[in-house]
Image (cartoon, rainbow over all chains, first blue to last red; front, side, top):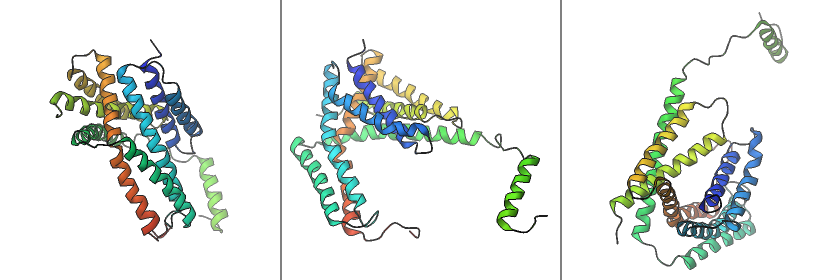
Amino acid sequence: MFGGNELLWAFLIIISIGASFHRMGPSFDRSRFGFPLILLGLTCLIFFPGELTENGVGLHNSILQSVSIVLPFSIGAIIVLHNSPTYGGRSIPGLFAGWIFIIASWAVIFLEKDTYSIIAITRGALVIMGILAGLVAVFIGVYLAERSSGLRDESEPLSKEEGDLVRAILERRLGGRLE
Amino acid sequence: MSIGFQEAKMLFSGGCLLFSSLALIHFASSYNIHNRSLSFTSAIAVGIAAFYLASSSNDLDKMTSLELAISSAILGLLEILPIFLAAITLLLFRISLLTNRSVDASS
């Protein structure tokens, strides 16, 4: 039945779709829906998680805890980058404001997480190994796909009209007449 | 307390499943006419192999073990979130306080 953990997964998928749309850049019309979709998914994930199972409650709580850390950190990082000498003009008040947000997120980390075990790090390392294995396999797939395309899609030679147009443009830009 | 082989298998397969599902969502969301089907196929193959690995790591039914593997992977990543944030903080510290070089056409 839809309304338990399924709702939580649906919101996570909406956030992923939003992030993918956003990463497409301004050349694609759908990129403008990216940020609203991320906000919609995040809002629903925080406020309307639905009736969760025990496993779902643990995941939801961890995500909420992470949002309370990542949100101020991201805001602080954006402010710091905009006010740093490398990516913009140096502004001491801007840098100060950014670092306040970053320090606040670290304060939340130290207040909420009292211990840090080797087991937690090992778990994280195993997950990263899984992600890297998937990444390598997809890279190989994409490489083979790109290699197999060959010269199949070589473009047709210019037609008479297109040739005349290119000739006219070159003559106009370079001056004189082309033989 | 330590991590058993079955749990390690589930975490590893959870990572693969998480990546494969994100890759498939990304391929589907950013689809255009120049996409090659083999790129999708490799993500699907990784997902199927990881699904098999995840379901063989416990006695639960297929969908529950799939959900358990992906949620364990997300929880595992969130547990080491402070390590990522520490690395980014060091970079931000270097950028904001220790570097005076601006990014321009010559760099």
